[in-house]
Image (cartoon, rainbow, N blue to C red; front, side):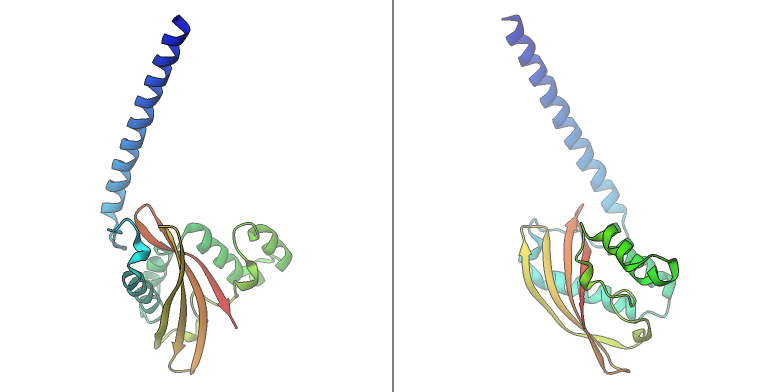
Length: 187
C-alpha cells in the first residue's frame, strides 16, 4: 500500500513538472518569436497546406538576398532564413578550397545530415557573379513530409548572364518560423 501511494505521488509530481516545463518553454518561445523582426511567424498549424504563402516567402528571401545592394544586411537576413546546420554546411562548401578542407573531409563531416552530392560550391542560392538582376520564374511545390517540412523546385534566372540555377529547396517550420533546411543544386 505504501509503495502504491509512493508511486502515485511520483507520477503526480512528474506530471506537474512536465506540464509546467512545457508551458514555460512555449511561453518563452512565444516571447522570442514575437521579438523577431526579420521573419513572419507561421500562423497556421499546417504551413504546407498553404503553399502559396511558402512560395511567396521563399521567392522574397531569394530576391532580397541576390538583388540587394546592401550585402551585409542581405547576408544577415539570409542567414536568419536558414537553419544553422544548413548555413554552416553551405559555408563549408563555399570556403573548403580556401580552408584546406578536402572533399573527403567535407563529405565525412556532413554526410549524416545532407546529401553532399548536391551542395555546389558557388554562393548561397546563386553563383557570386549572379548578384544583380535575377528573377524566380519557377517556384513549385513538390511534396511535404508532415506538417513541418516541404520541398519546392525553384529556378533562379539571371537576366544579365542568361543562366538558370535549378534548385530543390527544403523548407521547414521550426519554432513557428519558416527556414531553409537544405538546397539541392543541379547542374
